[in-house]
Amino acid sequence: MTDYPLVSIIVRTKNEERWIGACLRAICKQSYTNFEIILVDNGSTDQTIAKAMPYGVKLVTIDVFLPGKAINDGIRASQGEILVCLSGHCIPVDSTWLENLVKELKDPAVAGVYGRQQPMSFSSPFDKRDLMLVFGLDRKVQYRDSFFHNANSAFRRDVWNAYPFDEEVTNIEDRVWGKKVISEGYQIVYSPDASVYHYHGIHQDLNRDRAAKVVRIMEEIEGDSHIGRHDLTEFDVTAIIPVRGPLNGPGTQRLLDHTLSHALGCRNITRVVVSTDDPEIAAFAEARGAQAPFLRPPELSEGYVDITEVLQFSLDKVEDHFGVCDAVVVMLTTHPFRPPGMIDAMIERMIEEGLDTVVAVRPEMRQLWLQKDGEIEPVGDIRFMPRHIKESHAILGLFGLGCVTHPVFIRETSPFGPRLGVYEIDDPFASVEIRDSNYAEVVLQLLDDWQAIRERDQGANPGVSDLRKD
Image (cartoon, rainbow, N blue to C red; front, side):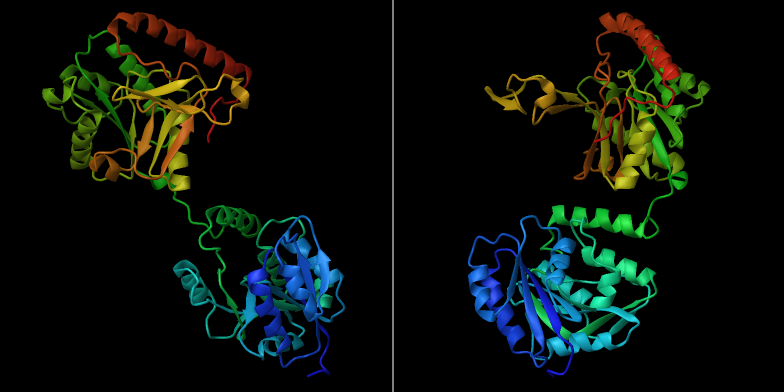
């Protein structure tokens, strides 16, 4: 087939000594013989280049790898009318790979073609699964689907002249290019007859960092239309506020009133339930607009009872009265320094990011140690240095200030679950907790001053918040 147009095969490599020989040998056995090979090497430190040179490749070296720029650099050094991209660790399956790939480009409506990818016998189960699911046996013509894969692809030079690859994206330059040509009215063809072996697959053995980069780029080019989101207006969220009687205890009424005001003002909370052992507290809560449909037994107010037992009992009663809710917010009256908007933001974060739980925390830059069985171990970075340049720091959990979770985790005796998110709050008062009645009066006066300062600052800077999400 030497009468066919010259094909420039762009092979990108970095330390592909293990694969490049097999890759180039398979290329040289193709039935379509009118081709040149451009090797774009990203600073290989093994024998990749030495193994490639006997095959008559044209070498292009690069120092910084950006996938689209690497392809463009190779194409700029090439002469062919047809351009082929092949990864240095992909091996054409048979001698008709190149012929089957480029024949699809005879149709001027086709911008590009990508071929099948098959796993190696030793590929990981993840990679085998992905390649088998994505690359099937039926030829496809894509009119709207922009999927394209440059591990094994081809396109015409005239199309590339009009639509070169993006030279700034760090991943999926092929999908970005596919999106562009599809939007311009071209088609993309998948050819299962142009197949290569690809040992690590398309998802890099579930490399999480790579996946995160890919998703960010896909969201930029695809927008939000393809992403499922919960409708917050349909989410049933119950706030549970455990309160121990009596109502005339030091600061009890004032702290409860303060917490109720915050909870009832949250746009994302469906109902506010006070779980108490005291009828007067229940009546007080209902008079403020909250729900108190049950009293918990006195034994759950003993000092040795874990909060999770109180929450389990309370949730069971809540579900008896209102049915199963979608999320539970836990707020304790003993943590009054709760910034406005905090709970709503935590609910939204848990739902939008699919987290099991979001708990309020405060960064702790001071030295911390953990004492256990007579041993003391450091927590975080305990070196003396300016706080703003510390590489790591501890975070102080403020469960009572705010915790948003799913009911299932409260039932399982742990309100957290494996996918835990933290909501950092910089306010230095956030960690203040009123447990000692001797200091209640002082802290309540401090609370008045704190609220006055916040109202003043919000008035001077409307819309400005000091909450920071990590």
